[in-house]
Image 1 (cartoon, one colour):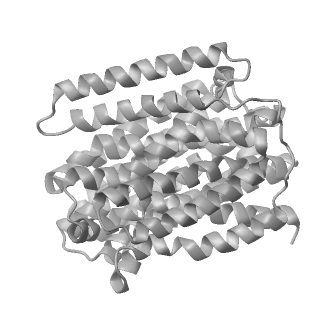
Image 2: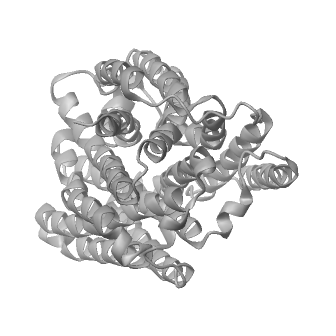
Length: 450
């Protein structure tokens, strides 16, 4: 096996950890909430602390990787992730677990851009790189889908902390492999790293999430909504202003002039909005309303992976022929059809729902592989880390908004479940139309130009 394919397996192992931890608590949440005595607000923050901190740090992590080397960032991220997993596994209170989830996000943020950047650096051939990124996308989908079933399976025999402790052996194996096979070049020490921009980005995201979460409550405090929204808006405005003035910005805003990259960002965010919303709602519904065990609920949710894995691999293989427009916009439309079908077949029981989820997974598999290739493949080589960060922020932001906006509906799940699914379907339809228009001038050769 050639070194670059061993490298792909190594970064995929790190990615699998990151994505599993994004969704592993969906089935574990009822048990964890009961045993730790967490209230509904604490429960949502146990979930949201991870994507919120990660999204806030991703841009800075990618640019820092461009400066000090993506191999070093990947290794640092693995070490932090392993240590945080131990802390999370033995957390005595909800507050400690929330803090541990935040620390997990620090490790994940260091690793995540490095996974794609190392693929970008390690694969020079356009077609091989598309295939590698499609494998990367498949692993991302697999991790998101496996999270609920991993959590459910572990809770059948172990205590809730096992959902974090299982990370440690994988970290050790990936760490050894990364030290051996990951390329150590592509460092540019002349470029400064801007901590202030990272803080501004995190404040902007945090303000937006708090505002959305509060606004969707049954009895919201509009003062909290207003203050959080103002803080978020000011932070984002300062961030954009700073990026335009810096000679070496944390985020080069001119990247968004590339149609394929911008459409990929939109598609990535919408796909994770759908995955997070449907998985969280489905796992909670079947445990709380239908009386399923965590493992049984997880097995239903894994239907996403059944559909998405083959379509993700196929999408990466044919992207250079058909172009991103058909795969991204068409995939979103297929996913929307699957969600609508799942709603329609729900009265028939869980079997009908699975059929719809498999179809939705097929569509999202096409989208996620193509969106990742569109973002990373259309960016200049020297912006590999930055483009990878943009890609990951898009995914994390989509999942973050899903939990923030849909979370309160999910906790009134008996009436909220079909509402959540209808919202997801509508968002996917809108995304299909938007990305089709954004990519109207992008053909199959566009990603090879850079």
